[in-house]
Image 1 (cartoon, rainbow, N blue to C red):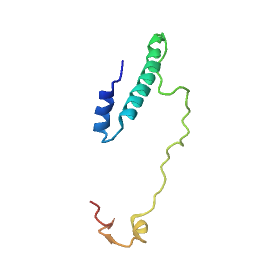
Image 2: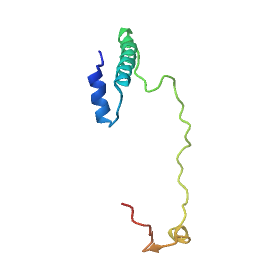
Image 3: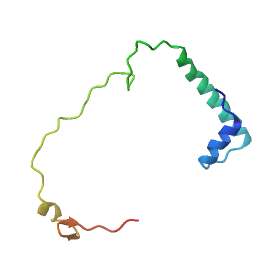
Image 4: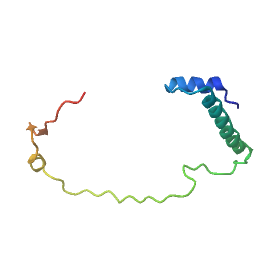
Length: 94
């Protein structure tokens, strides 16, 4: 696959980026180099390889979920600068 300068211009236009002609040629060349390198992966025999989401096995380091008593509504609202009908009152953000 070959990336053309026109394709670089198209993507730059979509991203609202402005490049000089020299930069467009450089980026097209760099993207082509990357694609050639990635294309080497097609040469590998991966028929007996199990799909993975990571290159190395990961261990879940999260704690186990446990239920415990939470803070009461009255206590959580006790320091609120403004409250109304059991809820925090905050400024409208648009």
